[in-house]
Amino acid sequence: MIAVPRKRFWTSAVVAEEEDGFAVRLDARALTTPARAPLRVPTRPLAEGIAAEWNDVEGEIRPERMPLTRAANTSIDGVVPNSRPLAEAIASYGGTDLLCYRAEDPEGLRLRQFHAWDPLLAWASEVLGARLIAVMGVMHAPQPEESLAALRQAVDEEGPFRLTGLSELVSLSGSLVLGLAVSRGALEASTAWRISRIDEDWQEEQWGVDAEARAAAEARREAFLAAERYLRLLER
Image 1 (tube, rainbow, N blue to C red):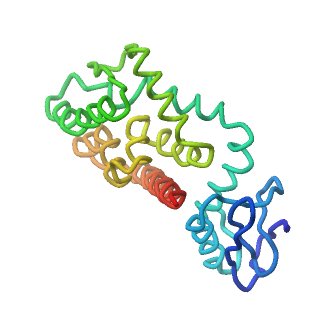
Image 2 (cartoon, rainbow, N blue to C red):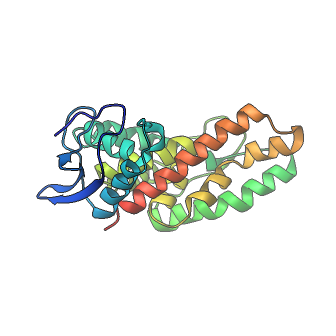
């Protein structure tokens, strides 16, 4: 096992199947996490995606361009040893889900939210058993306890590696329902991101685009799409 320096030193990155999962080798040497744990992931497709990131390195290693590697490292070093706190943090979004808080006006914005968000709340009710109540305004409104319990169960079913990707989806969108819909393949990430940005897009239409805010939003969108790819590669 090796600690990785800042510049490329290997000829090629390849996948190796081990007893405890799939490893990535830089030439003959196994890749490790920042905490020096062996990098082992549960599926070959994910290992192949990680290997591709290392094969794409030209010169200096740029972690920000290696989202699959970073997600795997986070899973192995932080989530797998103790997944409960992350699962609870993700599930807590169910009590304040973005999709449940609607604009009172203008009517155009309210209608956009209605048409985009109500079908997802219906999906959560039908598929997850979580009936969530939509309210007008931003004041907190409690959700039925049985619905929150159903959402916690849905999060627990994800498993430690998948929690890493789900956490990104939920925190970036502000919606547990959107995150679970993407994780379960009911919604593509590109569509989910657009749905989560209804309020921001409306403001841009009214007041114009702020270049700095748009650049920050684009970085978050790329992270959102990368989280979906991570989850898809975890599917055997």
